[in-house]
Image (cartoon, rainbow, N blue to C red; front, side, top):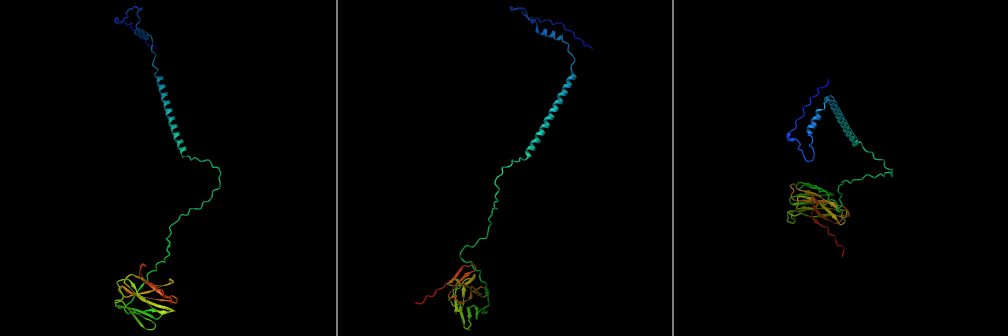
Length: 267
């Protein structure tokens, strides 16, 4: 069915106000608006292509979806390749053969060791235990000798039975200051030595020393209550000769000394 042809509108009447004015250059120009209006009225419009427009729109949407999917797949594949490249270790090319490795001995780490005494001085002897005895108790000092203590002082007797006394109360001994006394009896086969030590409650040892440096450590006796004085005794063998006497405290400090006085030769 052929659509109805639109009725051609009547030609518009020219507006007297827009009428071209004659001029000296020639005849007046026609009205363009009217010319275009008459040309448009002669064109018959066709039906709108709605179905073609819909098909074109669906095709464009499918292409857009396909492109987006392809880009997504490419992005994921690029990430996977990057991860694989990152995690895949690169193996270095084999090095050229060189000289055989030389075994290196392990490093020795020095460890701390106990300090070694480098002094030439001999170590300090341990303190001598002090034996506590009752007043008048006779102590067997060996080789026929006996020693005992009373409040008055030291007493001793030898194989010959002759008794001797050394007082601490007659004023000849100052028990307020550290000191030591020495008595000896004997001969070429040996000697018995004894004496007093006083002026200290921390006596450690009494030591005898001869000219060659040989020593003998004495036995110590005291009365109960630590009166601040005591008795010592010792035996020396043949060849010991003359000796000096020294009193030390329990830490090894020298408190008093009777040095050895060498005998002068014949004039």
